Length: 366
Image 1 (cartoon, one colour):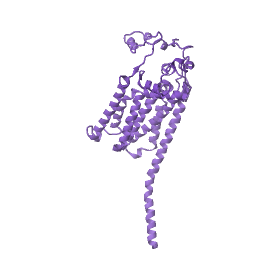
Image 2: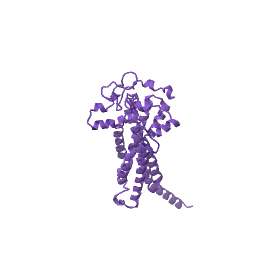
Image 3: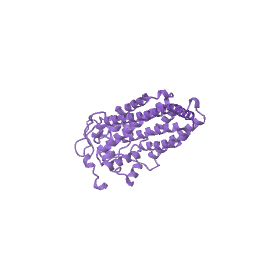
Image 4: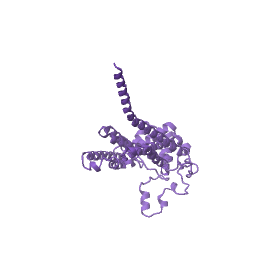
């Protein structure tokens, strides 16, 4: 082989290598963006956990924690008896999945309130991280130009997630053990949106992701029925920024009709789950706590009293009136009032009177 041909091949190889160099730059840029998103998400998790760390000092409070956790022996465990009660009981909300997390807490922590608050805190940290990825994907779809999708996008999504995570409105749901249903349904709510966005990005190949979003939505409904508004939110996202409705696609073409079919499916699931939880589908029991004299409490009695103009003192149970020393049949002094716990997680009350004794299951309930 002549030297000229070898030199020509070498020159051709060098030229080809130089032509391929620019193709590696987008790959490196995407990798850098991915690591930036991961770093921001870790930072959000750390800040959120630190802000709500004082909630681990909280006890069970004298506001629903007594009837739901301390005086309730039905949820303690994940055996068939407990699961049957969780899936057939309606205490204002039909929340079998939330009850299952409480049952897991009991298996792990017993009646130690630290474990229950830790689970709430970890769920909220997960909410903050998922919120970041949801906002990031929404901004990516809203900004059509690739030049606008730089590091500022990750920073903007991170700031939005931090505002969501440490806002004072989050304190009650995180610091109050009974409000597990809020943080759990919120996590599944955000996950549904995230998976739905992923499905819309993949188009026809995203049917598996779509049905995954439907499955997560069902779990959210079983955590708290408040998430029934999620199909409406997804419909708004279909208009903007996903652009699956309106605009160039129109409102009645084949792609638009497919979106309407998906909407009907989601609304049907929401309605079916709500009806099953409230009435006949799973033989739900509505449990009402008795008053101190043993009479059953009528659900709408307080509302009727207020509607007829009677005093609020007659409508509110004695143990909930300001300054009252009524606290049921539990021995000891009344529960302590709310006080600051430091940091954002400032909802702190003393333990329920008799909480230590009530944590043990009585002989007649064994």
